[in-house]
Amino acid sequence: MTAAPQDNLQKRRKRAVRTALVLAAVAVAVFVAFLLTGILGSQ
Image (tube, rainbow, N blue to C red; front, side, top):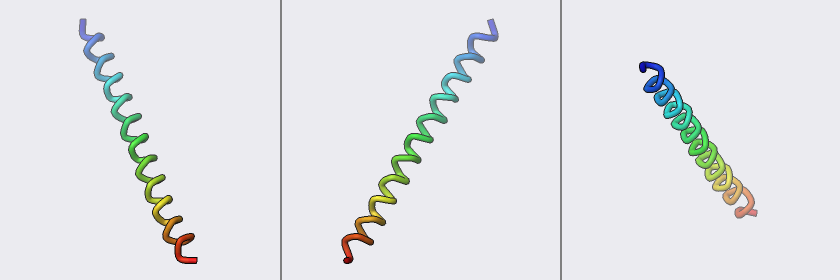
């Protein structure tokens, strides 16, 4: 019976890592968009 909570924990950890990576990708995309608007908007 100890395998089920361990599996659950691993699944939650994988989802948390995936969520963190998705949020990091969104943050990078927003940052790049901000830089591009600053560069392209100044011309």
